[in-house]
Length: 256
Image: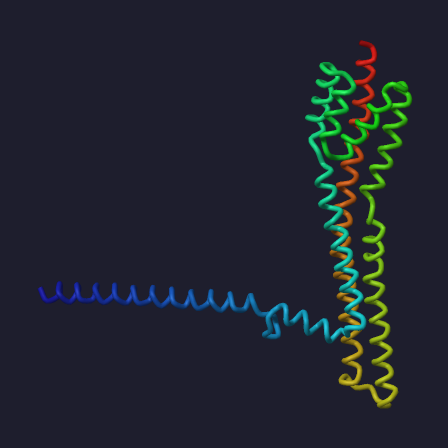
């Protein structure tokens, strides 16, 4: 009997100890997660990320970092405007072709022009220009479609030269800041007559920060630039395919 009571007491103690251990482990896990969250919001120097970026910007020198930042901001503004324009220019070409073909069969050229007039995008504009010159013959229609397609492609590429300029200019400004920083470091060595890490650290730091800023700006703009080019290429292929389809539809309509 005594042994049973002792066994039950030992079992109860073990359960309490296990519960205490579980609670302690849970508390420790919560503390670790809280510390990890705090560490995620703080950079390696114990500063918030935006303050660290601001500090590095000032350390790099506003005279060199500000032009790089200006290139990045202007390039992003043009890129975002182009992306919005190209997304608005994208239409459901299969649906448009079906509507134009139905309008041609039921209402003739004027009905097809009305469909194109009420549809946005370069494909609808090309269709409309081709339908306008249907009375002049299919050869004129084909030439008009090709010519107006080139005009639409030029409108889609508007502003890309500025983005490419900023992509090239950003690392150039960074490298120029690098050269200036190295000149400052050697000037400090010449003035002191001795090579000391504290003398050259400031100039080398400016050199590295400006280079890094220029490369980051160029990489970001290059990604947007390539994305815009891919969108334009897709639209150009679509315009070429639909132009051929338009000529075929008008040929069939002409035979009727």
